[in-house]
Image: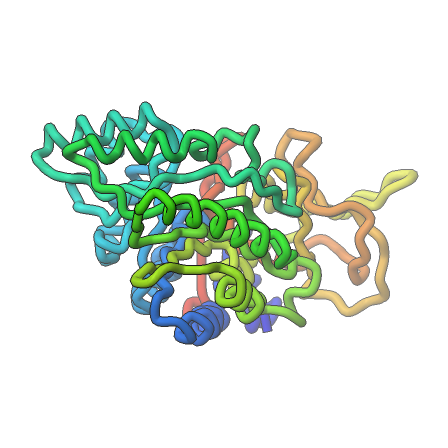
Length: 388
């Protein structure tokens, strides 16, 4: 069950806020660990950009996972939350000097390098710090993903990674540098991917690249395939857990690891999306000539995904069991894009009803803003709500 408390219990807190089902989060982590246990070479780095809520991080830290960071602030937060710095990897096309210095200061496990200029800066800053930085080269594999265009990252015209054609030259550069140590290759083709063929295509490309490295006598410790596994936004109650079994089977069956190599993953959404919901309250029901609008107190400032990507989230009226009507569900922010859904069926809705926007645990709270001077949302778990 995605949401355990009743509407009357949820309604005791000032809305909008994020509700996290800790039991579901732990079930997701346990399912993930079960599939990973089938191969001792697998290492998980949670993509902290998906959700950095302290309660969420506590569960993930206790699972023994590492962290995938994309900013200096995320590195500092992960270390403060108790994660092992040696299990932190740092990606991003625009690492500022202070962020690289932060990674060096904490002694993180690896920098995922995305360009030659970045490589040169890391080498120089590591020299100044009298240390050596472990690096993986993020290679752009020119592999597409069947997902929203804004979250495809593995095509040659995307901003991410080093072009495959330049890979050998960049590897040669690293061999001449005294303060970087090349330990692997990193890939990430996109997000919210549910077609396993996309991951098979990535495996095939990595196999080709590794064959080329073999001919050059180059041995690497790590292959990092990033994340990208999607969830079922349409039927979260039916499929609260991602298809970890198929995801890991793809890599076991298709990726040809070399002796002694580790396979690293960077899942984010798949771990946390389904355990989180945005809880809101109906302000008004507005009946226009052609439309009925449910105007809620939650907005794009709490959950920007529908406005940013046209993302779909299942929406429930937890207060009503009346006959269904058709509504647009919209927020109060002064933007025409502040719309959560159009022409959806909900039980007859009225002012004060509790509305839940499901599958919002990833890229929800962490992307919230103060636009229109709205306060950032608070968050609660079952323990908070049931204790009241």
